[in-house]
Length: 150
Image (cartoon, rainbow, N blue to C red; front, side, top):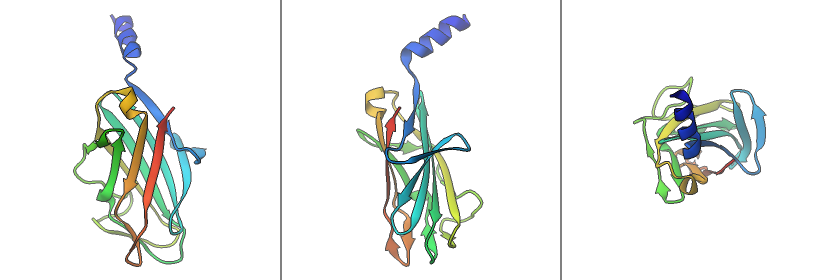
């Protein structure tokens, strides 16, 4: 019976992982990609999907000399057909509390979340991760990463 289940799952192609074009691959907590961000930030991203969910993480590091403000709950993901719905109601920065997190120079906000998806390889072959809640000195810092299925 187990052989049939494995065969059915393999035939359905129920998952995959993503890479960030132009990113530097690091192998630490799994495969992650390091990218330079706007306004003296660095991004560390990962995404994978299995059946009906995309698991995503992004770390935003403040490489500037002034504080960086992050509203963790403003992390979004979209596939080819539009925005994905998050499973969790609130996204947080690991090791930081609050709806608004202020990062000192050198600090990182690590966020992880899961999005609900339709298991459609064509629809999920390219994802866009954005974060609309990053500012430095009251000025928006754009965060946008394209993720392509391996």
